[in-house]
Amino acid sequence: MEIKLIDIPKAHDVRGNLAVIEGNSIPFEIKRVYYLYDVPSGAYRGGHAHKKQQSLVLALSGSFEVIVDDGVKRERIMLNKPNVGLYIPTNIWREIENFSSGAVCLVIASTEYEEAEYIRDYDEFLSSKR
Ligand code: TYD
Image (tube, rainbow, N blue to C red; front, top):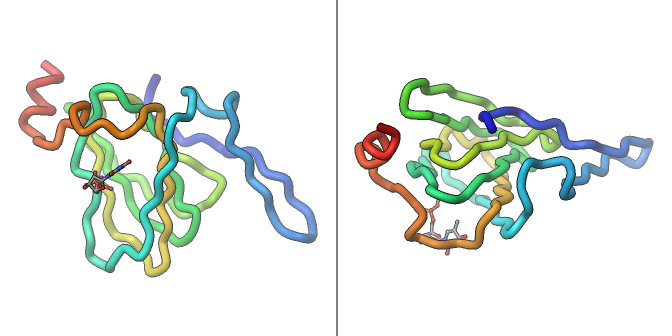
């Protein structure tokens, strides 16, 4: 599986939008949901890769940029739509920055939280890719 943007199906009518994320719209089974909010301007988040975890990252409100790095190529992706998620497979280094005021970053993950499956050192990440 590759890094990709996934459109989240939505029901639109005069009352607004209702977006639904369920089993068959993302490439993994959901084990955990967490979100970042009240992020001060200038803050930097992420700065890790995962040995097991796959995730879908969404800007539920506001905007931010996600840097994804597979060890060879580094890409910067702006997320600013509540119905578009960035799918990040295992073993991809990610950083998140340039949060707008009021931004809410939702992360849907394929694993429960387990610090041992994090790679928080960039050089270690690069060596794991070789
Ligand atoms: P961290 O991984 O540094 O956040 P980010 O990648 O968004 O910058 O996590 C911040 C703190 O929260 C750290 O002490 C670990 C804890 N944490 C949990 O307890 N459970 C979780 O599911 C996550 C993602 C983090």
